[in-house]
Length: 229
Image 1 (tube, rainbow, N blue to C red):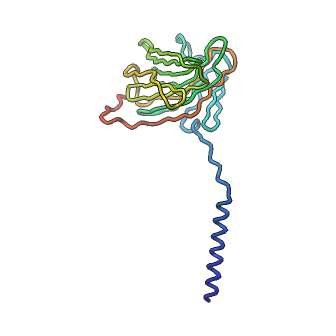
Image 2 (image 1 turned 120 degrees about the vertical axis):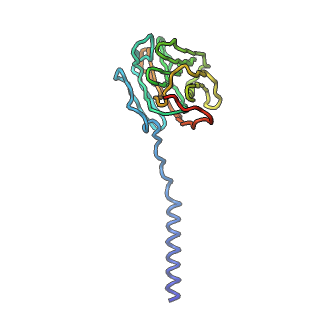
Image 3 (image 1 turned 90 degrees about the vertical axis):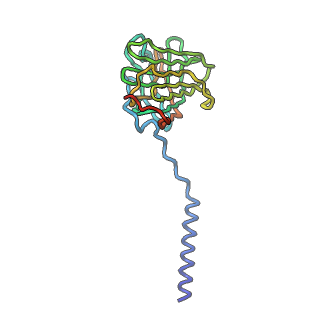
């Protein structure tokens, strides 16, 4: 009887050893691809109907076939393709932007857009240039632009704190330069839409690439009054 019990213990120990060895020898599971550009987003907006939205892991590529896809320009229609999502309350949005911006004539730009009813805010990048725009119908536009050392990509950050918008740029994603700090210029409801946009008024194919996207919901600051809407 004692010998039978001993045999069972040995068999059990051998089985545990086999299981452990199999687990060690087995390859690590392949991580699931990130879906930062798939979950929570609205349907892509493509007013002209000829642009492409390609998602690959944490990278989104918006391909614009050529001119005729400008953002707001002299009151004309917004033909630029964009990808938007809804968000409530305060937040910070960061994204890296790159693409084949160089062109002989016209413009190619890519960046962040915020839409709040008829109010809008944009911050985008073009070769050597950062441009921001705040638009409120019936009020003059707030426009800011400055030169950036030539670079293949730029990091953009948009932060909303109640009725205050902060826009910053970075060449490395670590050191940030303040570009815009506006409070009360736009009438911002509690819920609005944010996302990315690519525009082109130049001939030839333009590929705007967005990656390292991070959207962070911010907790209310102590003593901060509730949003008006």
